Length: 213
Image 1 (cartoon, rainbow, N blue to C red):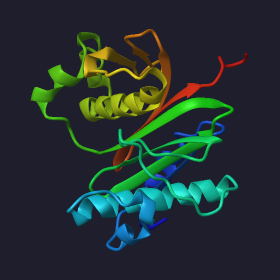
Image 2 (cartoon, rainbow, N blue to C red):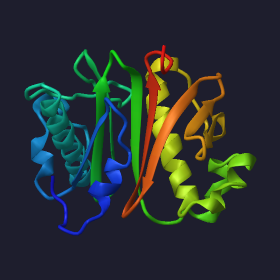
Image 3 (tube, rainbow, N blue to C red):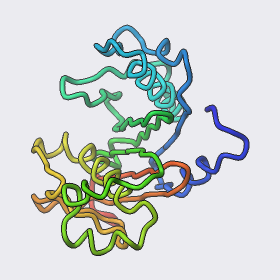
Image 4 (cartoon, rainbow, N blue to C red):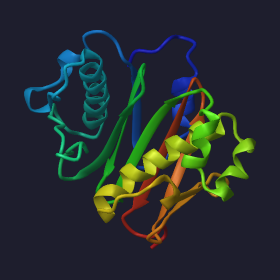
């Protein structure tokens, strides 16, 4: 995967490590749009969108190869969620420059979600939209806290959408960075991992069974 020799992002991604979950990234480059297979082509007039989608699938296919799968398409559901091999769950994300993917075996994880955001502050006027009062009281403890919170909630949405089939507003999810968990309004608890580097990454996951069960 293309990275600069001194780029700290790969090491930061390693700190997201959860046994059973594979994570990878790629810096988006011209031509990545050609990686889209016919069944994966998105309906968009913007090369930028197709390029990012292609880059994310390059990463995902590399991870699937590591997990023992050959070349396979990763098309989309009408909701936009990627379709994975039957034995796997996974998630894709990208910002303007970097694409990321995460996969895990369905026997161990009910679902996972990942998000990547630029390492920059979230506009102040968006904080009330994104953060609950309790979350706002803790954000100062984290660099780029508002943007990191946004990434965490996006990852949680992806992890629970296919499980609960409910529409969630930002205040329907409350993130506890210290405990590395998020509580969804329906009572579901989602585990979280996150890192702060040249990008902000958040990983959310729901285990198939309670840990230690």
